[in-house]
Image (cartoon, rainbow, N blue to C red):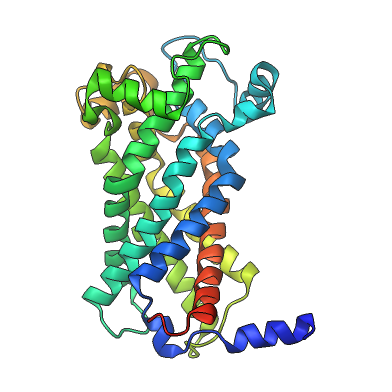
Length: 315
């Protein structure tokens, strides 16, 4: 069977209308986990740079002049591997994050709107908001807190003497000194961020995909158009909620005791740094999120197609 025949055979195995309308949560969890793990290994350096710029505050001497300066100094001081500081943390977290996101989305879709082949904007927003809030609680908040603490630790200490010697050592030290709440700093802004993220993304993505499909709900959209739809959805979410992301990052730093709560953090940023501070790191965040969301939707949709082909009875 040549390549062209294989492609036709795989396309013929695409899910039917009823299968597309309903994805089992277990299948969504598996596909989401695979998509999240692959995506984060590709896009992590932009996440690293974004976090560095967001914690580079005006109250002291600023370390970086911008994204390019941050990349240059990091490579000079720590080598290219320095741009992957904290990757293991996000890798541990990105797999369950995407698994929870898509599993919760499909569960909410099947529970709230059973049998719907297409969701309208309000329905997509409801399912996306549900998925985002749940992924914030079960995966994103602890993952993001640990990631920020590790990056901040490298920033404050000598490169050969970091306080956190590894993922498990760092987590155990945080829990020992601060209790389990230490890995749940900034939970409220994280829930707001993730809930609004997924609400915006699923509304935009579903709307664009439905526009490309037209009246044919069985039409399979190509990889590049799917990536564009996902990337556009990601870009819209960045423009919408970067201020919340900045607040969340500040509250998860190692000197988090300086803020009483998320509102005190927001007012402090505004008072001492001005409105522009709420959009620190928007460049690298935009680059990462566009790539991230575009890749995840492509990988998720193709993994679902592969699982439908390999396990046709899994419904």
